[in-house]
Length: 126
Image (cartoon, rainbow, N blue to C red):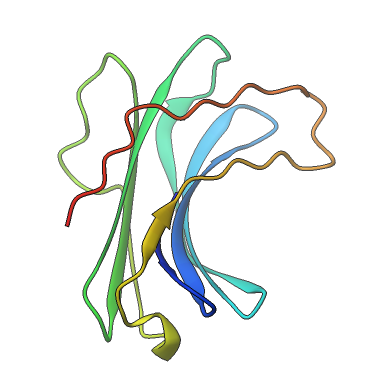
């Protein structure tokens, strides 16, 4: 989920990574001029299952530094009260308002294709 996309400059994003063993991790990144840099990562206490659905929240707030926060939980369970990952960054070109976006990616080395990804109930708040 891209929480702040500054047109022509780059973005801040939160990602949910599914490992080959089914472990889930949250990652925060910045992408500037075609280069993506990891800001932080954290394992979450969930194991991926093809029959489960997950909710994810990403928040990007502030400037110099910007704070990128993320959390994920299984649908039908309570949303975690605390952010599971918080990162900060002061990339000059990203310290302004931007748009949001969602995206999905499957590694070319993945052996479980096809994978179904759906986005539902996207809420954007200021």
